[in-house]
Image: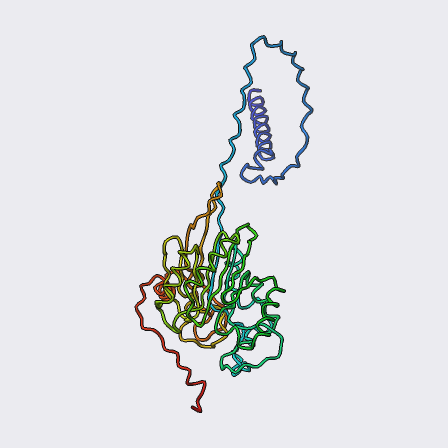
Length: 398
């Protein structure tokens, strides 16, 4: 009996052990280890959360019994001090808007280079002139559609449409006192003036003065003189006084004078310039030598003895390309007093190319050899010899 019981216990124990083993084998915890479970994740769309219970409305606060701060009285806005007004006058030398007859058919002649583009000649300087209050040039050519002939080898006749070149260059005044003004006679000279009038460009000839009021309100008197390259000091001085008496606040004398191809002012230039300033001129600006000459501060005036050529159709390849834009700045104080504030020269080439004259004046870059060379001619430190212009090529038969 004891053996039967013992055997039975062993059988049930074996059955129990087998049951536990089967449970362990088929259990999910064992069958899937955590490192083998791969869960695909999703970014859930935003959903509205549960509606929050409204906060109870707080009871209104009891009115304050504190004494309110006094309202500060605002400081009065100070009246701005009136600012001075400035005026800038720009001046350049000879503008010859035509070639002479012998070369008019050349591709390099000014008429053929411009080819109807009236903005072309002043394209690189128009911004300067449009920003100033007044721009003055010496017009060394006739502008007329009249048929005319000249006995001079160097004679310059541009069509009336060429006044548009000056307009697009922001030129307001053109003086006509020079040795080419009468190349085609009195009728063409008069027609030149009529064409300038039609274009709205003020002008004056030898021994004449004109008054111009700038858009900014400055009254400028311009007096022109030539007299065969040798103006008369007393005549110029009287012309200055006449403009002052007519109401000019600023007087500019434009003189076509001096020795051709010379870098230095002669005695006549200095005498006339000083007499003009002594008579009340604020600026004297010269042209005619086709070369730059020094400027001078004399008493209360500024003298530019020669600003050379500018838009210059008279030569396709001149020996000297240097020129400047001369500028003088005036300042009117709040009490109306007008004073000369600044004078400067902006060095340029008459061409945008170095090899040939393309009739498009272009500023030199500061610090370049060309810039420094032009400035030396203006500031008086240049010591080079005068040029000699040889015209023998014009008459090879001689």
